[in-house]
Length: 266
Ligand code: BGC
Ligand code: CA
Image (tube, rainbow, N blue to C red; front, side, top):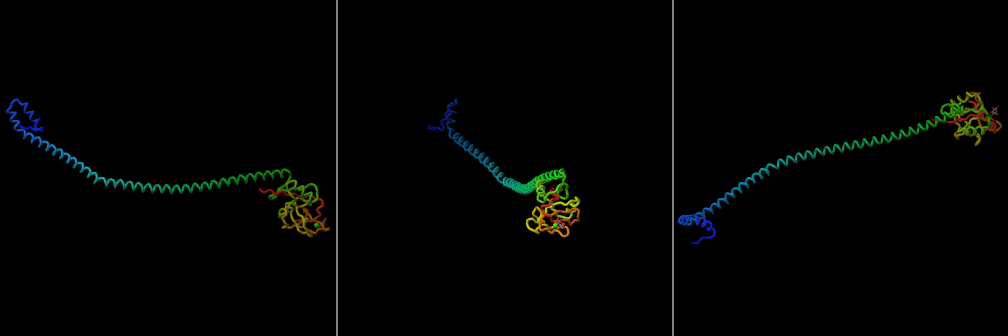
């Protein structure tokens, strides 16, 4: 009897049996057992394959379900994200617009602040000047000067030539009086004196000029004056005993009282 390797295991089991006939009998059925085992293996393979196919099918179902159900979710998420993006863009535009407005307002306020600071400095400077002028006014009033309009005036108690009188005024940081209006003339007239005023034609005969170089505009000459009596009358006195028109040209070397004037602009 020829037994191949595949049958040897089965043959050994039969040898262990007590009965030889039984052994023979089993040995005689060896082909059927082999066939049954092979069929079992095949069935096993089929079952495993079937199981694998089931698993594969189930996986495929799941994948298909996921694949079919995913797009709406993604679309939904995309729409939300797009809306959110658009919303954020709108918010960003609003913020940019507000930033622009606030920046403009800030710049405007800075300009106002700078203007205010400049104005404050200017006012402080003005206040300083005013205080200084007030101190000057106070000083002259304490020295016995008297004020009218925006000037203070001094009347001498001694007599001098026109030039010496002028020099005295200059030493007092003033000059001989310049009479610019009838109101000023009226004010000066109260003092009842014959006084040198700051008017002369020494530089050119007949060309009357005030000591500050300005030409004569308001003339308040006494009647018949100026007459340059004797041909050499180049300086002017005001005779305050007379009417408003009370100026007379005299020789500059004559000695008279004089009046100084100091302008004080507050
Ligand atoms: C005349 C003046 C003149 C003066 C000189 C007067 O009588 O009216 O014009 O200036 O004398 O002292
Ligand atoms: Ca005269």
